[in-house]
Length: 188
Image 1 (tube, rainbow, N blue to C red):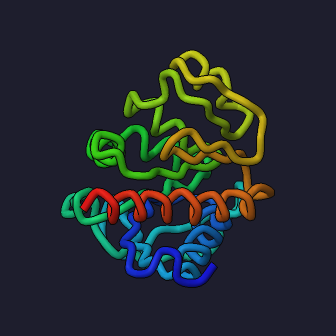
Image 2: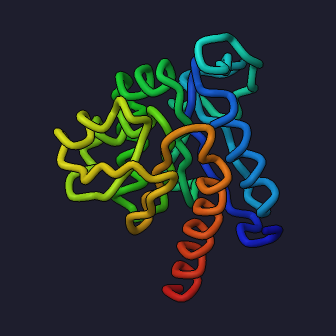
Image 3: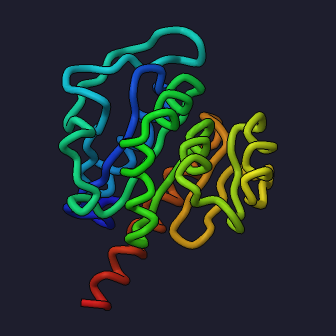
């Protein structure tokens, strides 16, 4: 897996309440593949990750959302966590940041409760997706084709259900992000 994403800058958008495993494992996968993930959040300092409903470890924010430019990143990862997903979808700047990746045709990966943000951004209609099971009605009502699979790839969108699916989610991230980089190279 080493080297497929060499030098790729990847935004990882999260705030307090992010599911720790869904932040840490994709981050590690990105780094092992040579990418440069950056934690984008609502302010500088740190955020508190959670292990389900229990407070976990703190993570240092790399870039304040207010100064983050989607054009500076090749891809986006949206970790889950019910608190994180709800806070991020309620922030207009965060939703606009996410929508900009879709508008530019850049790859986006979302797990667990993160698809709430995609609903808010208006980018799920007609897409085949998965999520934490409790979001299936929300996704269907927003026009998505929800399926119960560990990982779903629909074009440049990758979705996954839960921490148990992180191996498949990480593999799909590397594959899809690398393919997007290959397409950019061919287009240039």
